[in-house]
Image (cartoon, rainbow, N blue to C red; front, side, top):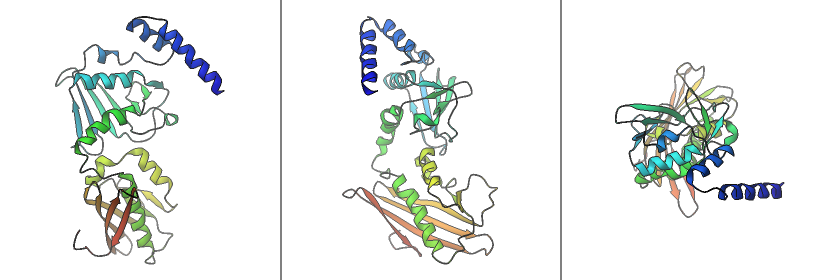
Length: 279
């Protein structure tokens, strides 16, 4: 099977290099399904600005005006494969493409870090595409790196374990395990820009049957777990997690500090029942 794929690859190379000129090369790539023409307008100079906006934090966005970066985005999008359906996950970003400072040409929703088997991760009301993770590693990462000193290292490796550790400590106080617990991260404003749908989905799969994430205000849980990021930098993450039993109306608050060890490449989490002096 591998040999057949290798032979096919070399045949593709021979066909491509047998043509001369960019136009002919592009046509070959389109015919072979290696490229689409849906985003050619970007290469024609019609797009002057791209705004990449977090769907969870309205104050967190990137504005792209560099023709070099716009061409890089075009290169990634032009190699995207059309998908029959979009992913069911919530989008992490919107990509708004502008003809000028004020005139929008098109808009797309984007889900970061999605595997191709899960459906289209770039889509709007007209089409869906499976986009390479290069858009995460080559485009989005560059914007994140401008503030790298403040970004928590491996955010998902401290944020979700904190939530689970706090819940385990709370349940150890004698809480009825049959009570339904709803975890509220949707109101954690400070963490919103770091939260990605693929990581949330991975976290949900690890939860016990009586635990779920709160998605709206109409939940039927017995206990709410409210997560509030208190502060962070690259190697320290602080959070306050509050449990509220709706029947007894008893509230329990925990203070959590995560400390990153570059030598072990992991986070150590400490939980306090009262606010520590260095919090």
